[in-house]
Amino acid sequence: MKPHRSPKKISLNWIPFICLSFFTLGILFSNRLWVPPESNGQLLSQRRREQELQIVSGDCDTKKTPGQDNDVMGEVLKTHEAIQPYRSLDKSVAMLEMQLAASRNSQEMDNGEASKVVSTLTRDRPPRKKVFMVIGINTAFSSRRRRDSVRETWMPQGEKLIQLEREKGIVIRFMIGHSATSNSILDRAIDSEEAQHKDFFRLEHVEGYHELSAKTKIFFSTAVAKWDAEFYVKVDDDVHVNLGMLGTTLGRHRSKPRVYIGCMKSGPVLSSKNVKYHEPEYWKFGEEGNKYFRHATGQIYAISKELATYISINQPILHKYANEDVSLGAWFIGLEVEHIDDRNMCCGTPPDCEWKAQAGNVCVASFDWSCSGICKSVEKLKTVHERCGEGDDAVWNTSL
Image 1: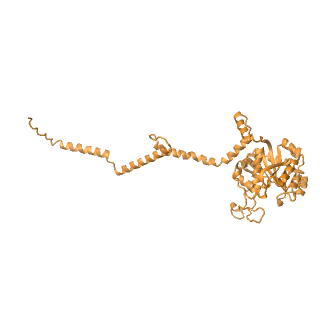
Image 2: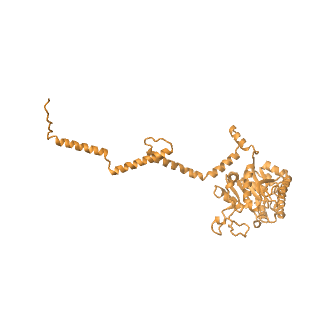
Image 3: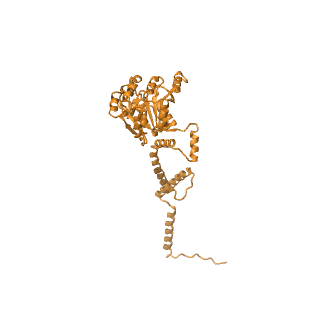
């Protein structure tokens, strides 16, 4: 049996050293495992942000890579900056569409693929003929005598009308729609007149005095689809026109992209229901007594190809006011359009237009302001033509 060995005693000199060692170990252990309250809150906040970023990245079905968290806000800022230019682009979309449509309508496409596209789009209708201007004379079912007075004065007839289109690129037609009743006596009368003169342009439109704004939209849209003209003109059937002067006037502006030519005016907005040109939507123009924005008087005006194309593209959403000339001006008020105020397009009847003709300043158009056309035009138009006309050969000698 081995003798019992008593434990060795630790020297008193080692006790301070051992205490110091345990104290040091305790400090290191506490710094590793114990987190102050402030640091704990920061840790929770950091973990919450990490979870939010994981949710965002999860929505996009993307895998998160180390360091991606710091790039999220940068990407958001980049996206925001990228959106800004598109907001300004939105403001010019309508104009770009108008120019694109005009370009497609005016340029012939020669390459194979383009030809296939054009063939597909236009196979149901003949190609448009290039001309200088299309003149639509606004008329009504009851205006047969007015039309005859125009035919007897400033509008060529028969072979001359065809020759004018072929040699000068000037198309002239009476524009009219249909009656509310299909194949009515009114429609048959126009059909008979067309068979005799071949100078009508029929519109898909129900005739009515209070539908002139709609008729104007349809005229420009239909004319653009049929003819590729540099200008489109609307004139009333009780106005005298000198075709040569009209061509010369428009020719001065043919290099401009968007022009609106006529006698510009700014009449009062009439809120009273008992007046001829009552405006039911008068409240849109501000306080009582305000005036309309500048627009061409409705007896005669011309617009360039781009504007007619714009009307054709946007026809369904263009608002119609009670008065046709106001409606046309409203359609252009927010566009980059040059308004050309040409007072030769609204001369008075003799002696006014006669004095100007004698002075060598032949008028483009003549009418009486008091009648919004030539007063008693059936009886008076021939006299105006004799005293204020430019001569029957003028249009043929005009360089267009």
